[in-house]
Image (cartoon, rainbow, N blue to C red):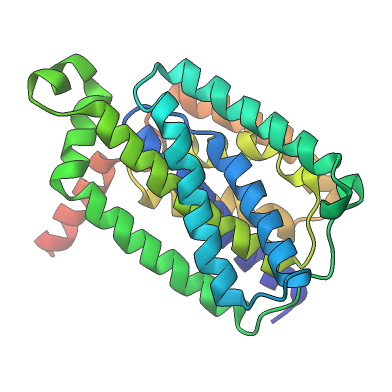
Length: 281
């Protein structure tokens, strides 16, 4: 398998996990960009734990997931039930703070980057396994009473309260789970690339993830897999002359989809149609 194709597969998994980390809180209309800052924190934690402290991979992985969940859990006390705009501002602010701290901390490599993170055998296989486990977990949430309650909150929060649903509690739960998913993505990214640079964890990553979520379809987790492969992975395979234009292409695609098909390319209705056709065969 070529190095380029390895990167295509690896980054596709990372984009899928990070897009799911945004998708889950958005089930209750929370655009939770804190996930990008969480990914940065857990990625650099992984680098320090592996290089400076000599921790084994699986200990780092479990610790990174718990750290990501803890960060989101603590912040969820503040943004568990606030307007979407406030959640967005808090997330963007944390991205700025995290990136600034990393750039000005020599222990983390500063602007020069953090290097020499040890390679892990069968890292792509591990990434596949983690992605499958998380996909099953999200599928169970989407098809549970919790998922149905989230759909009601997304449609009308006042109606949710009238039905006895507690949006704040569900929002905090989803944000905490989202932080754990972002934590796993941060650890996997660090070990997969072997080096870290603060510029990766910036607003261009937010733009990429937004494009993946809203073009794939924010109402279902499956559309994200399709869009992450196309929008996250494929640019790695393209010549640099083409991939350098990807931000412009993403912007045009995102605006076009929002105007023409606001629910995204793959919706629950679309999946139901396919399911019914398969049953009718």
